[in-house]
Length: 613
Image (cartoon, rainbow, N blue to C red; front, side, top):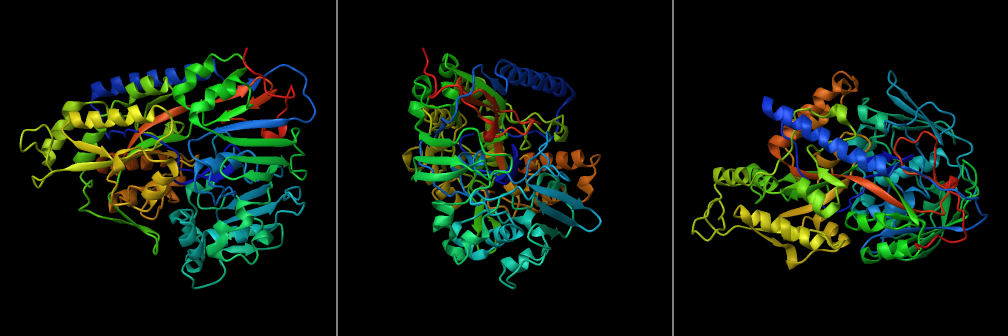
């Protein structure tokens, strides 16, 4: 995981759920032509879905006064309720906040931060010579209590995120190698000083952030806190008590279009319009966001219970297509599922990965064999109705100019998987069809996967069956699928009962993946690092990489190293979709929206959502 700046909102990437396959560093001449054909086929497939269901939804009808925007959020687990757009830890909380409370840094069509604009909440300027990032806060940018957002709020946010007591208590992953580019932040984290010297406050509305070097990811907001807390709300709260505080969990102030009015813990959040929103008070005065069990998502939309349904699952897409009371919006998602392997531990005292060269899963041929045994394109068609497709690289497909065109990914090949295991020394010693370890002893892999939609169980059985086909004994941890929260709690704690796992990232609109695979990245859940991999990642953050002529080659090198070492295995990318009730007059789901659409502009044409006929 790493930070993302997305849809006008800068947030941290959230862990979500499910699967993936990685890219090959080279291809034969014949393979190149085949690869081009496959990429064209994938592009046609995804674009046909997007053509059929465009991201802009428009419905006829006169807008009514008042009303409540009713939003369903599909999850088989309660939300955690950490209500800050930078301090949150899971995707459910993120979805609840990102359209209601967030929005400090709008982005352009290339996902880069909009700089030097008087219209944005914070006017941003990067001075390459002085190595500073300047903030000027728009006087219209206010909290929901009417107080202006100030530089004190920004400084307090950095002081929380980089404080080691907070990091330990919250198990926070926000303070990473990207952030260490800020002058003085490491001394502050280590407790040597009580202020971050690189945060130069000029007055309540102006400040400069001094950095050690300019890096390309700064153009996307990398290394910086992307949403802020209200400093006055957090006065007197001990750093190790922040995650328990009312300021974070019950009554956080908001500078987005809405502010929390009431919470039914784990189930529902009720918002009211923020009268001080910098774009003007929202047209719809009330929003309700409610957790929807996966089993109820279709019936709820059919009955007209919700206007919007976020995180709707691909397995019910055909049923939703049949409903006459909704329209479906789509867009290419910044998402990658992946197969991970536990290959070390996280050192929380020093904020770094400690790789274990002797870890059970730290064998590159074993990892690659498990990858070649999975047919991700077939899975995308069978289980996800064509909304997912094979991921050939850890770099999101929206960044096509950064991909090595020869990258093919792990193409389904059982014979190749078997030969890799033979080569690595995993042999069936006693002829029972199950391979022993390299030492000739019993070898079993404990595999963790989340519960969720109805397809999770058959998916898990597919994976284990495919690995059985190549002679590997793979069993589910505890003999069952794990609840979302339990799954990630055990992963982040490096539970020794887990050898391999299927998980996913909401990927960054900053293409630099250091926060996912770096040696100082808490979201590097495979706990793998090497000098070669770390060097390839660090090269992406150098001033050299700011040269658009040199950047692609540096990304190609990272992709090659990633494939050679297989720290984890990318599985699938996906097309994201959003069911929208026909009483919503207009909704823009596209990434490339230049109109500045947000929920303050939503209008409703009826008193209640429309039910299907």
